[in-house]
Length: 325
Image 1 (cartoon, rainbow, N blue to C red):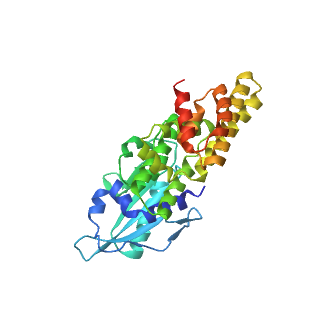
Image 2 (cartoon, helix red, strand yellow; image 1 turned 180 degrees about the horizontal axis):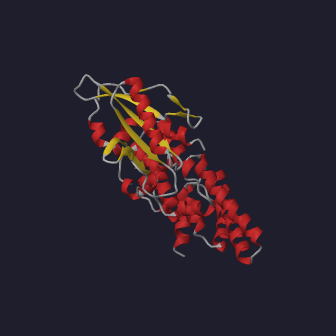
Image 3 (cartoon, rainbow, N blue to C red; image 1 turned 90 degrees about the horizontal axis):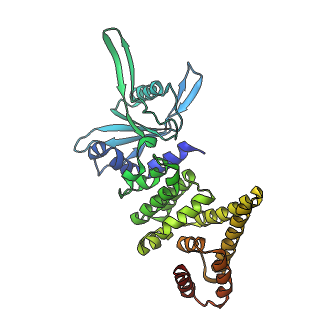
């Protein structure tokens, strides 16, 4: 996965929103009437290591109420590296040498492990003398609880929750919250697709997680379900279908009676989902969730009753009655 490209696209399209979410003091210093200018790609050669490094993102912005500019340098670090503080200082020194402007350095640590606190400074000193104390702002996603950002009406929050600190069991819930928050922002289709693709890249659900996602979706209020469905694209439906297929395949491979029964159950659910989609269009997640709650006998009864349904309302009425039986 090209982590740098994903983060660069996200930040370049939502730079002001990123600052407002994580660096509100810096955002307050920007002149709102002066466009943000992203500088050309900067490539620096580390002669001692024999490597070339490309700076992720450098934005030229203007101070509010001043005829002066400064740079905001943002690096996304997708893996832990012991020499990163020194490299961050090297970027700073070379950018300052080239542009002769104040620089505000920021690092986003986006890896999952390790979750120890990352350093935010690079120091050089001698006994009794501090020669250099270079500091940068650290945003370490795997140490930020995702629940802290659920209520933030900010597109960057809806994307980066996918990389924040979460328990494995919370992955389906986090994905749903990312898309639910995205739905409330009412962005244009291109920007919505960018965030949806970011979330999908980092929160691919397996079969069990897809079923849990559907159950969580069914708990949303009707208006939230309708809004979130806008972003329930083809990859979401494929995730549910994949979950059913994997569950059935696992049942066959294990060769255990319990696994076989589970696979047979999921096969019935998948078949009914296809039949419903053919009759009435795309199958909503809440319908998938309700199918998951039916017994094998009820699924058989629904397969027969479906032949007589004339509208989606007939299906909803049948499911409502089945849930109370």
